[in-house]
Length: 509
Image (cartoon, rainbow, N blue to C red; front, side):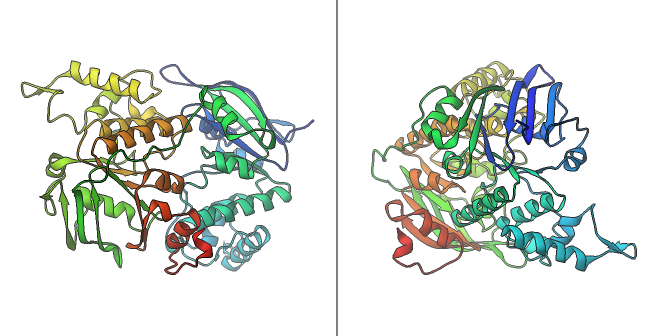
């Protein structure tokens, strides 16, 4: 049988002796949706980056439609019919959708870009596959869910027969996720082949035909989805059973720890956060749901003192921190897991030891006689690396070399170790494998049960619903819903996230 994609004995090693992929095999049939799963650092993204021409393998063979291929760049992969949609969209905000799609493969007229031909071609592809976009819309004005469709159209415009999607639903509402799956099924019916990198078992079960599981850079399972189960896939990924059920709070919420009153944060053209008020109490997790770009990041950064306010007040553990520095706010009792783990949450060229010391370096036990103790920093780092299962060559390894999920574990471990009254957790499990999600959820609930207050901002509605006592929904910088978790459903939250102010009884269930 000739497979659409065949990768045999693919090996890739990085400096420091880190083996990302160790003689990995992958076969994908034409016209199937194939899920690629594994824990952080298992080698999934590296394997797909090799297929997409981003990396060259040290050894192994790649065949596409039965023909052996060697890719020197992503352009070679595109020429072979391989298209990859990355988690970070690669679009020009100042250009319209059609201009982005045809970039470097433009239709021309009299030597110039033929905009009308580009618009017509994008409209044709969009209609054929149910990818609802306006070809003339400026990318900077387009919602994030539509941007993903633009990236898919880009690949289809270049006649991609194999489409690789890396964590495609991370920033989508439930309704947008459902729409994406309909698009994938349409592409499959047209004979296209889809490779889906995801950590979400529910999505794998809903849309894939087969699953390949990697662990520690090696194949451990190839399964037919309809004949498997989430529990079986999880066992292959982790080597054990995983329980994501969240225990109820041991105690009733206490006094307010975070008090936000009429908070307004200026943005471009309009307020990024507009007149928002709420509180988070001791022993309580308050979740904030919303599609990316609706003010959640700006709200968290304003509470941390990273953004100026035009109005409002912030109290942390009874201390008015409205006009205080970040250091003062930390001293008042706040820890912060930022959404941007690379640009805000870590120093990529610094070691794990140094990164794990950040926010701890002004106090004991790391501070000894007014000076930082290197020995205590190393001990601190080694303990957290072990506790959170960070896959890293050494505590002195630069964190910029880690996979996204392992870097996330570094940031989460550092902030939870502060044991402050308040924790702001933005996307604490984004890009993290299911075994680590279980561990992080356990740490968060223990933090809560020890009297900590958590403001949880997550794009994962299942995470928001399982961990939170109360759920706030943000839309265009405002809180449009405040619900006890017992009343929240994905459909109801999704409607509020999309800006619908009124919800029927039928939509509540």
